[in-house]
Image (cartoon, rainbow over all chains, first blue to last red; front, side):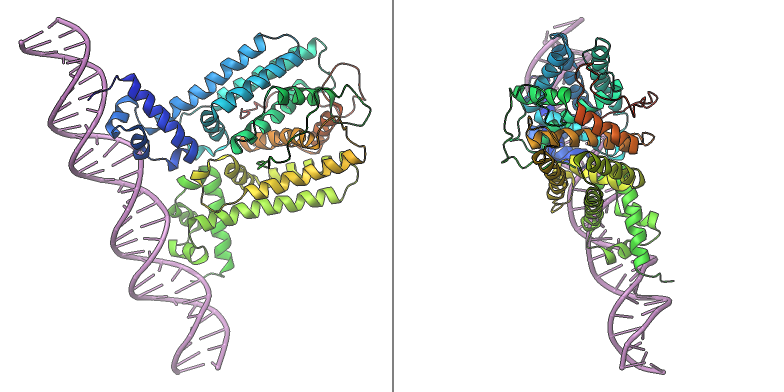
Length: 219
Length: 219
DNA sequence: AACATAACTTACCGTACGGTAGGTAATTTA
DNA sequence: TAAATTACCTACCGTACGGTAAGTTATGTT
């Protein structure tokens, strides 16, 4: 019996996402994907040009969606602190709810180029995401919301790296779930700094990081 | 003519490093490696149990060496600021001089497990590296060198994530070469924070980040 | 000189992969 | 209702892979 068409396509994408996220592009075979999706191989080749095309569809979806919610979160807030908090919370939330998609897109960024299909061209989309945050910071610096002792790019690196560490931590250890409070703590540290015991601000929002979470870091 | 033995082994490792770093584990074939190393396939299987064993040898080398120089850098300095600066500078230097090895070990951390050989067990080594920095920060907090408004783990995440961002940036864009000055700037930001224009400290050490470096970020 | 071992080589095998040729059943269009 | 198109299926092909069996040459050791 024939299915509804788009439904089959969705099944293939869903199965492919899981396999690619678990085992990477090269290791995953088309056979496995069509097996999971309960369709035949030619069905897959009916909807996608080849294995690489299927992979690209997933990666681009991941990047674009993330960029979209990033902008939305920033637009709905004013002031760099609120904006950063919103962006972080949104990212954390999205990351927790679309773990496989995020694992895939992070994977493509850190994996050696030769392992992935050509024409992936995700560096541009990565840059776009970073530059968006960078511009927010630049603007905030101009408004005096952020210190001018640092180059805007230095600041962007700082917060971006910090956040990515949390994201990757979640991707590696699913039980580690950064949330709204985490976002606020990160922004607070970013703004206040770690230096001295000059009792720089209120101790509000403080939270013990559960030590049971074995970071499993990632260098 | 027969070669000196260990020399052949070294050639194989060197060729394998390059291939694995460029194309990843799954995509690289044993044929390519022995081709580059100008030896035959059985020569490789004479020195290594199998493809996975060869890969493991490289990864473990990378992690252990990095851990060693990390400890050394910390031991030769006192005070958290000097220690962090030294660690960062050492890491940057090592990363620039052993780029392929670093690409390999970062790759293994971010790549999905299914794509790599079993028994890789690099998460422990990653944790070990992170925990070392974490302990330094804990000690500094006790001595009052660092703020107690934050959990020690929060602080460690902050600096560790920040640094990793620079490392990965270099791995993706080789022209971007963080150095001693970069290390000092990062530590300064970590300690002082990005908040306000209260002219928190001297403007010494300030440096413009060359905008010509297109970050190529990585999310 | 005789033997053992280390350090390889050529040649090959079975497997699993990505992809396709060619056919079929349901659905839409004329 | 007939033609065309959509949505698949079974069966298969060529290739390149990881790994090995069996032979060869140099280098000690006795």
